Image (tube, rainbow, N blue to C red):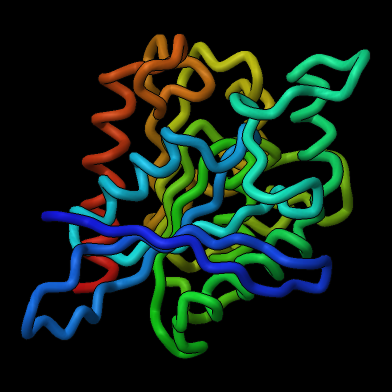
Length: 247
């Protein structure tokens, strides 16, 4: 299925934000009422791989809405095309971007992104996130009645020592969630998620898939950590989950 994308600029409580909207190409006579996927980016930001993944999802018949969560630092920044400030590394720059965001800001940006894409407040959605986006997926499922299901690939920050850590409320999750984790991930290891995994283990609607040998960031083709088996397995599970949610 052919796809098209556009970038919409919208306002937030912290200035302007770009929103990437990717969907099947409108055909003559088509209603174009595609089910919506809210995509939460990973730390490196919206880059060519993000565009490609959104297009791949759109080719399955979805309208994919991707807010630029790094907009407080600059428009459409990404770690591949942005030079770090003098005296810092790319890794330090990216960790600074992460530290500058709160859960509340991310969810606010998601709401503004959906509104900018003309997704009505009562329109059902599904959601997917990578790395830090996994935590955002969990927050969305817990707080948004229209969110039907979520998928999180190579997740980050699902358990910490703060009073609002996701693992503390995870046992009360009532919606389908799919987690894809590599057992070679040292950036956010299985041990770091264990409290969250323990909390959701009894839940019938939560699936945790561990991929042998897969590292953090296994999603992205062309990058050193890409793992085709993990990416393909997670893709099949996620698209099955989303199709069932909208069935």
